[in-house]
Amino acid sequence: MSGTFISFEGIDGSGKSTQARLLSEWLIGAGRQVVLTREPGGSPGAEQIRQMVLEGEADRWSAETELLLFTAARRDHLERTIRPALARGEVVISDRFADSSRIYQGLGRAALGNMVDDLHALVIGQEPDLTVLVDMDPDVGLGRALGRQGGEERFEGFGVDMQRRMRQGFLDLAAQNPDRIVVIDGNRAIDEVQTSIQAIVQDRLR
Ligand code: ADP
Ligand code: TYD
Image (cartoon, rainbow, N blue to C red):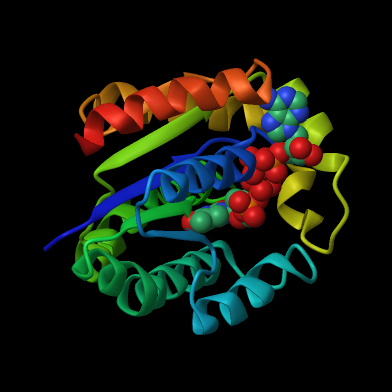
């Protein structure tokens, strides 16, 4: 038996976490077994790595070390949470997965695209069955993200220009992977966005 692996991607504040949670509640209501998880994190070890990578000074790690930490967290998440749930035939919904490394580390401060791809091939080697890209205007997304409290603001201090490049990067990735990545317009009310997502997921799960 093998389950279904769904990831949510998009810039900070696009509404991924909100939509992932609502989708999970909807699927559970329909009688599915669901594991709702997130990256970086999603397993005890990966949550520890999350703290190391998201908190503290911006220059705490080099871009390369940071990529290794994100990748190590992903490997642990896969081993301990994602693959066991898929083997049980469950639906795994992950708030971010490898596309986030392709965009944030691939287009970020050191443009590590080749290293991202090589590491992925070497130690991850798995893609979601479906990726929901919640696309939205970075000005709106940044306002939402900065409105939240918490110690993880390091990554949200990027500024609107960087978020625009990230948004375009995600859209390019979607164009390159049309069978896997579905682009959803996130500039709408929460329930309207969710209705679009449910229609796509229902179609895929059938
Ligand atoms: P992400 O996980 O992509 O960073 P969140 O789901 O945490 O985004 O949403 C960021 C903030 O914006 C939250 O306060 C959330 O309640 C709010 N939000 C999410 N989706 C919408 C929407 N469609 N319209 C208005 N506000 C939203
Ligand atoms: P997240 O908690 O999803 O932030 P948000 O809810 O604001 O979208 O992710 C934390 C940050 O980690 C986010 O800015 C993106 C970044 N990140 C990477 O840079 N590389 C990665 O591989 C992942 C999974 C996340």
